[in-house]
Length: 300
Image 1 (tube, rainbow, N blue to C red):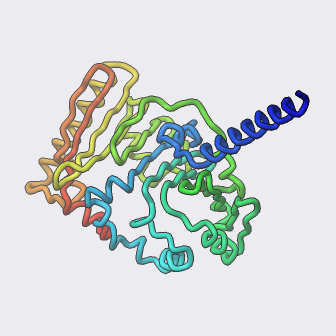
Image 2: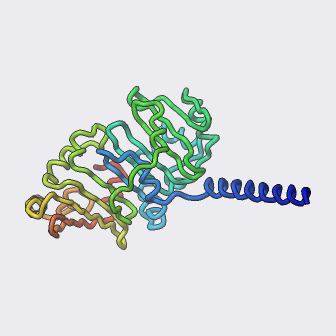
Image 3: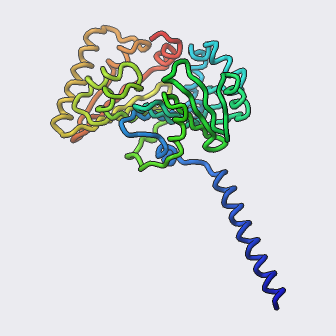
């Protein structure tokens, strides 16, 4: 009886251990959902950008940017040679947070982690326990990264040499997000205060005065790309004023350009249409392939 009890206990222990091992393996192998990744981005006072490179690649949009100037830079070419990573082929998705403390990335794709660690070492950086730190071009642009999963890189650029650690934290869920392959969520109040947002943000904030937040989204639509706007205002009256201002700006552009050029930003903006729905202003611009080719060529 005693031996029988011992065998039974050993079987139970073995079953528990097997369950734990299987659970850990499943946890490590599982893929993060878009929502789960978004909850790791620092979002307070941040501009959030999402790009589905996989869908853009399938739609034939990404190949337009194959000759973009960024791919011709010697530093980028050296990075590709030494790591084997090329965003045109290996990157499937990117979530980016332009936060007051720095810029944070969650990148989904195919990574050669050993090559990336070796690259960091050649640049004078170091990797410990798979967490890498590399000096940037200036002190305020220190780079840190680690593998959140085999196919997900967590990366940060900022004054803090270990800023990527912030991407380990799970935060409250963001508001409902678009399903478009490219979108950005912009809290208007943050644009003037956030030093890490792209150039021209202050002008955008002035144009969209009256809006609390703005979603800009883009998706392939036949041979072109459709860009849409959803600006959430504090009241219906503010939405009315914003819609009127956007229509006036667009009308002025149409009057200034007798024959809109699809390769020119002015021609794209002149094609915008807007409508108000309660406290929201909805806008839409059709973007022709010629404009994307011009943008990729660095003509703008």
